[in-house]
Length: 225
Image (cartoon, rainbow, N blue to C red; front, side):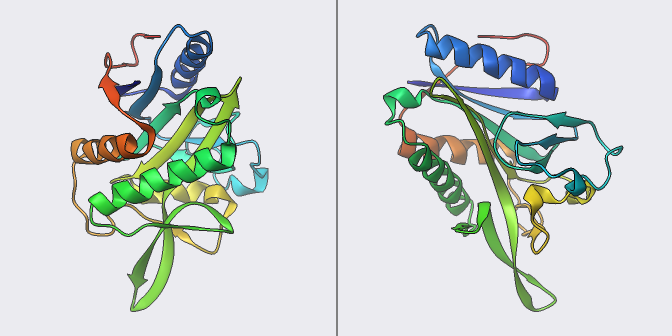
C-alpha cells in the first residue's frame, strides 16, 4: 500500500526536501510505507542537475533552489499541484525508463479524466497539450516530471499546472525549451478545484501503481516520517 498525503498549507521547498529525504531513508530501511505527497509551494525556481545558468532570466524574482532531481529550471508556486512520489523501485522492477513512462501515463490519464488531451514528445520532457493562439495551433507544457533515486527509492516527482500565475514562468526558460510555452487547466478554460484534481490524480495513480491509503496530513509545521 502507498500512503497518500495532502498538505493544505504552502510548504517551503527546503523543508519539503528534508521531509522527502527522511521518508526515502525510512522506506529503504523498511520502516515506512511508500508515499505520494501532494502539496503547493510558495513561488520559487528550482534548478535540476542539467540547469543552464543562462536560462535563469530573472534571478532576483523568486528564491532559487539547486536540487538533485533531473532536468533543468522549473517554477513552483500556488495553483500548481506538486506530487512528490516516493516509491521503492527495488520492488517495482528497477526500470527507470518504465517508471518515467508510468509517471507520464499517470498525468495523461489524469488529464483525460479532467477533459484534456495530453501527450508526450520524444524530444521534450513532460506532458504537452495542443491549444489555439489567434487561430494557430501550438503546443504548450502543462506538466513537468523530475525525479531522483536513492538506493532505488524515488523522490521528487511531477507538477501539474492547475491555475498558477503563468507570468511567473517568465523568469526562467522552463526546462530549457524556448520554442514552446507553458499552460494550465485554467488557461485552457478547464475549471476544476484542486480537490477535484487530487481526486483524479489518486484514481489514476491507483490504476497504474496500486492501492493507496490516506496518511496523516503533512504541514509546514511538522515533519511526519
